[in-house]
Image (cartoon, rainbow, N blue to C red):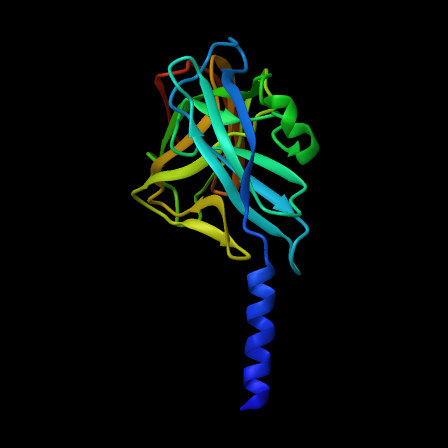
Length: 235
């Protein structure tokens, strides 16, 4: 019992001595379109404090903000003792019009004071939605094969994000537990949704194999921001 009480006392002293995070930094900035340099409104941001505290290091939300109509934001940061940097995160996964790309987002703690009066600029890449519909309209056998091998914006290094929006036929083939996007069977049809670079030409490449004959085809399509671009592949 004495041992338990001693351990409890040590734990209490350790936790009571731990310093609570305090609001000691203030940051203001602007969210901008990387291409047009125009402000972007209503973008949600989190600022994570990061540091080598604890066995695995520590990452905690230090503050949050939302850009106003002029793209501006301000935030007080509650940073824990020992933090070495702050990582701004922009929530673009629910926004089909923008994506974080090539922005120097990590800010060393000793540089935060620079952004109290000087705006910190966050640039977002304008993106577009591309829907690719596909269907095996002339099935040959259960070994028919279809695969979209590439969807690449021609004038951007951005790698489009893909999701299987609709699958009305053969399931995707899994390789090592990861869906590779390959489809095999007579009843192949569905829709892929891509988030690609906007106001840009995107090259689509796909492979079809029937009766042991493999054929690769491609098509270039312009994807404007703010509109859903659709393309249909019948094979």
